[in-house]
Image (cartoon, rainbow, N blue to C red; front, side):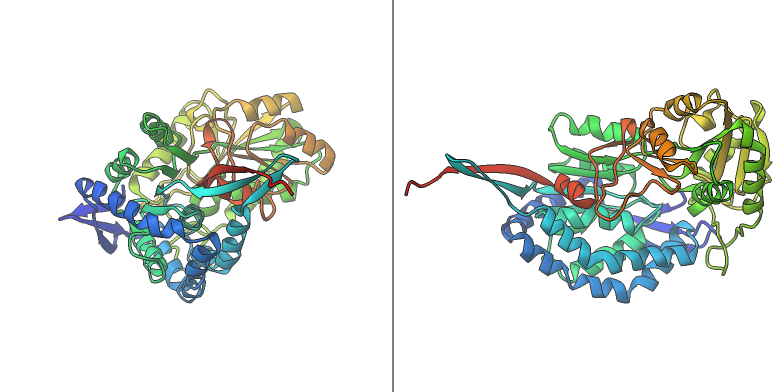
Length: 461
């Protein structure tokens, strides 16, 4: 990891220049059971409130988050290397949407009444109890809010374990919410995988995790003996299919933006591009033009599109995949030159195939891999030749045809002539090994609560 532990402190390092940003006190593994106990005690009172009451307790935090959005964004940029404008935009988006999110969660978890001639049933969304929320570093504010807010409104108490790469911004976010929450309802836990596993093994009822497929599998195994509920958003290896009738300017712009945004450190980054062989050369030319216009550098500088990898370890992984692909016959169309520090140049690889690791395993870096196809059936087969199934995209001027292709792709979210994210109210959901459960939107919010059915006979007149 980029961060280092010193005398019980977790020191956060700026990946752009290696300078320490600040530190937090590491939570001891031995102390986690006590924190879980305190959270369970606090849950009695918190869970006894109504949905509306819990939302009203949290509602003033929206204004505080708004007032602190610039500072939170600046801190996130320093900790993980996201361009400053994007980081501040993430913080502002979360603050602006906070109140509406509260309302959506309350509506999603409201009682549902079912009745027949004999009886009336109430479907009640009750809290599970104590939730362990383990959040990632690539969207350190957005993913935290999407994990913590529905858990709290549902009546759970939360032990928040942010990534060791971004502890400072998580601490600041939790501090703001804790200005309004009762003691013990939201408790940050700082550390690395040891603290995360200790939380999973502790006496918690719900585990919410966003991160790698490998870690997700371990969490699922550890949660199994206690039959703990889990919500896992795991990795992706998202395909983009460019059909022969696609608007190549639109498709190339999307490919460059979605492959290199946040230095490729996005769960739904475009990592595999399948393009009709007849338009391959023109598509690559348009991608190359747009890639050459990108500016990489210190994320605090104006106009920078790409910052560094979050850590030297992440950079090494990405560079190793690129080097292995080139050694196996891939053509380096752009990038590939060494960069100092944690920077990896935006890279385009052509002539790739599925024998190469870079086409099978998640890269999580600024790399776009382009493979030609001869038929739509072949494109669909290649897109589905993966254990992952988070997002995907299909580009083609004939929207009906492109939509038919999209429906054949095995992913939780597929965009046609756009990214994979749905309209407001849609869940963020993965298929295959990219997720267990899901979050966001009314359907996602309900994953944070236990459905209970209370039935009583109707009174005779």
